[in-house]
Amino acid sequence: MEIRKTALVLGGGGARGAYEIGVWQALRELGIPIHIVTGSSVGAINGALIAQDAFELSVTLWKELETSMVFDIGIKDILANNGLDNRKLKELLNQYIDETAIRKSSVEYGLVTLELPSLTPKFFMKAQIPEGMLVDYILASSALFPAMKSHEINSLKYVDGGYTDNLPVGLALDHGATHVIAVDLDVFAVIRKQRINDADFLRIIECSWDLGNILLFDKSNSRRIMRLGYLDTLKAYQVYDGSFYCFAKGEFDKRYLQGIELAGVIFGLDPELIYKKYIFNMHLKNAVDAHINAAEKELQTNSITLKELIQESILKAKATLNQKTLILIIARSLKESGDTKNIFLTRPVMKLLREEILAANYLIKESLI
Image (cartoon, rainbow, N blue to C red):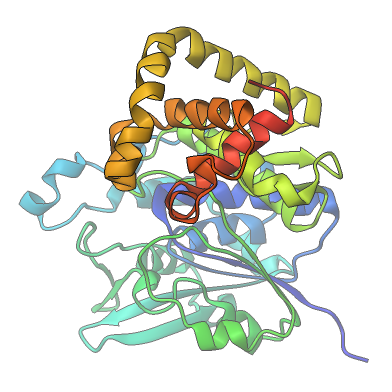
């Protein structure tokens, strides 16, 4: 009988890495054991923290991390200095990474980097990394050239693992993983899709929201995306419903979920909360009422000219009006006239204003306008 081995595969993404710690938090709470962890770039850093079982330490690190703690100079000086120096990052890793604990850990740990100038992909498990050199190999995996300088080990230069395999599922499979949980931080990088397809049991965790600039480490954003990683993982394991938002299980009719979430996104509801239906609707109504109060004159004026704008050009109407205002005008129109002759029920308009009409229909359905 095959022994189940679960691998956590962590993608690169610089400052977006806080999201992966949120994923780890949820997996811990769900009682899902990690037998193998592989990573690229910041995924290699977080993977090392996971291998040494330093959860509280990793949370502290990400909640306090700022750009000045990682780089010696400002982002604007990258070109002038031929890439950012990694001296501060090395100091940080030496402070937080416990090589002895990682080597003693039962969790298998691996990372990926790219050797220059041969452009040779390099995949290393901890047993293949010389004693005392683990931080150097993590730095090699994290050298986001040309933003950062390449990292040299034994006269060889290495750059970021994202240039060869930003989501090293294959490395985990090659070392016995039977089940894979992969965290994709949605950055421009090489992903070996064939190796991902080789996984028989694969769960990819990714975020519907923008996770922020990969080179700007900001405490506030790190706390936000750590929370999103936590909630997205619980949704991936069907503890909650939703994509952009986190809904208590079974609270919403899934047929209307897309319109519900679009309304929330457009009216700026907080994605860090866990919503029951009445709470979500209360927040949404407050946001709708606030916009009506602030833009009533605009609503009255634009409702008169909207049909003329649409008849002239649907795209022009969409580009001209504030999206919140557009939704409210559509909702009012549909509410007042539900007949099939309503312009918002015609195929061309429904196609180009699909998101706005879905959101408007939800506002009407729940009597929020």
